[in-house]
Structures are given as C-alpha cells and as structure tokens.
Length: 105
Image 1 (cartoon, one colour):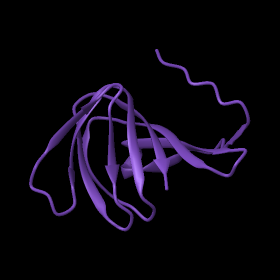
Image 2 (cartoon, one colour):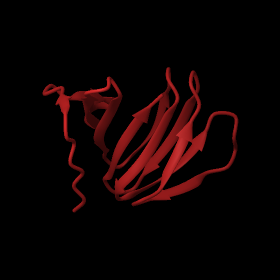
Image 3 (cartoon, rainbow, N blue to C red):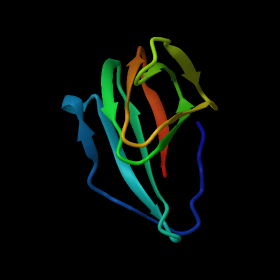
C-alpha cells in the first residue's frame, strides 16, 4: 500500500461519485491552492471530459486509456502517469480497481 503524506491540505469529506458509483474520489486542496483528486475507478469502461489539463497518476491497479482523437489504446499501471489536455476527453477501461491521483492544471 502506498501512502503519500500531505503536510498542509484540506480534504472534501463528501465524495465525488460518478457513473453510478463506478468512480469515487475526494478533492484535496493544498495550502498553495493546488487541487488534486484522489480516487478509485471500479471495473468499467468510461469516458471522462476535461475542463483543465489533467495528469492521471496510477497508485495501484491498472487501466487502458485512449485520448480524444486517438485510435490507440495505451496501458498505465502502478507508478505510471498519463496526461490529458484541457477541454478534451479520454476513454478508460478498468478490469480491476484502479487507484489514482488526478493532478489538475
């Protein structure tokens, strides 16, 4: 199990629940205003739309993802990241729980 210590942060105690509970996350705001989301995606095939640019960092599990405009599915596992442009979307396929940190901006 990986644990990241956050020196000064606030955590939204109410979860963000998407896709009928297939994705659940909590928003974390650091002292400098940086916002992140920490969550899990359960087995599913989903499409996410982005407002801000995002970096999806896999903490545990694995996924396959495809960025908007691409026909290529790529894999991302524990310790790996992938970037999604602002005002875009990505498809994600998860076979077992995918634990992530989403870095915004």
